[in-house]
Image 1: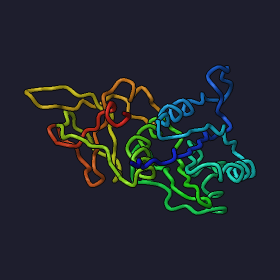
Image 2: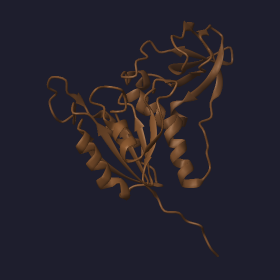
Image 3: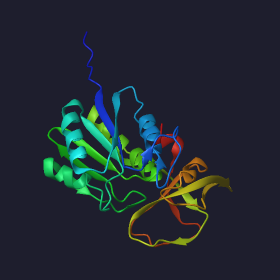
Image 4: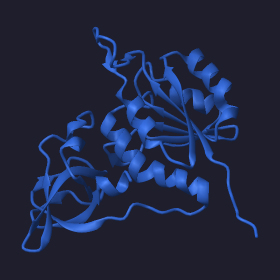
Length: 238
């Protein structure tokens, strides 16, 4: 009798930026806590993944390039958080283009616009934004299913359920939008209440909510009672 087995996927990950320090250190000037380390480390904690933290990518072309070339053969996938925007010191995308290729950069998603996917030699490179809400939601909705697909050959996307919006708002852009909401039952129907703070840097907008309401890109005006797909945090981060 034979049993088919597969190797675990090897994933390395960086956090990016000169301003990052660990929470055990005192913040000075423009420094910020390296919170994305803990988030990504936890989300990669799966039985089918061998993970390794590769450190902080400093804002230096040579340092980024040399670190990639040093580690590229060791991993099937490398994930970065931060450094994929269009800032003056964000060299990441330029370097990937130079020593590999970028399949796409920037998505019509809020939060999470500066997502990029590329490849250097045989290693897939996934560049996430630096804002913590973007990191969590992009990972849960897109990156996790993609990693599972690489392992199994089967793509299983998150399953939502239809709920009614208990608020009205006007979208300011033509992007798909993930709105953090709390869910309540009313007259045997589930309704979604919008959380007051929706910024991509506001991790509290996830800590104090139940999930996200997905508003399609073509929708500009949301009226109370409109129906959209809801994704529970308990399910998408399972």
